[in-house]
Amino acid sequence: MAYLWRGLTVLFVVAVPVLFICSSVTYAFNELRLYSYGFEKYDISRRTGITDEELSASARTIRDYFNSPGSPLVLRAKVHGEERELFTERELTHMEDVKRLLWGVYGLGAGAMAYLLGYVAVSLWRRGRSDGVRLARLGLWGSEVTVAFVVGVGLIALVGFDSLFLLFHQVSFANDFWQLDPRRHFLVMMFPQGFWLDATLFVGILALVKSVILGAVCVVVLRRKRLGALWVAIRGKVRQAFAGGPT
Image (cartoon, rainbow, N blue to C red):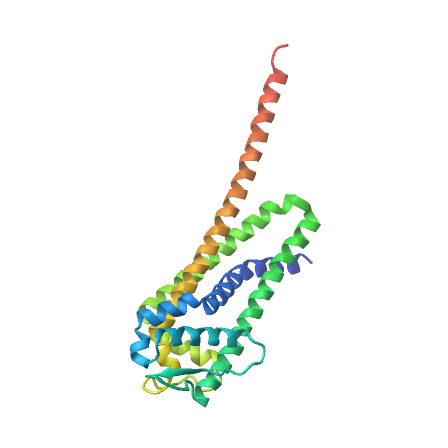
């Protein structure tokens, strides 16, 4: 039983970075301002012939598609003033793969959240509020693991994003539909590799912010507990000194 509880405790620490990263990815895919930032930074309107208004509408359509259970992606926009379907069958198939992957991230994040809440509830039920210090220590470890992982991946992305981007696609997808031509496929015209580097860094920074907040809260809890214990010890020494003094 002790080994089982230790395993569940290790899983708790691991679930912290899983939750922070998955929730950050979820936020990034649903934040339209991130899309608009990329469109403006990489001058997508000029490169594609699609107006900024049409690009914004396309971003909303893509976001809604990712969050819909089974609706197919229907994306039309005016290219140099002429309305047309933006994505080919190859691009649409890849978007289906991306959607399945994203829903896996949604599920993994929800599972991590449920596990963390369940672990905390069971711990408090078994040991009461006295287990708060141990939980704070575990939370601090989880935040430290998050920082180490995100900083490591961030450094790799900064010095070799091309290789990291290629490896991600090779591992994540069982087909080659992600291999698209930026000269004729609008999916990679609208979302060039630089966009994904920015998005990766955004996800990392967001996860770091969450881990720092959690770590700060845990440090406060641990220090308050230590200060409380120190105060109790000092008060006991003072009472003992007075009790043992002359009457």
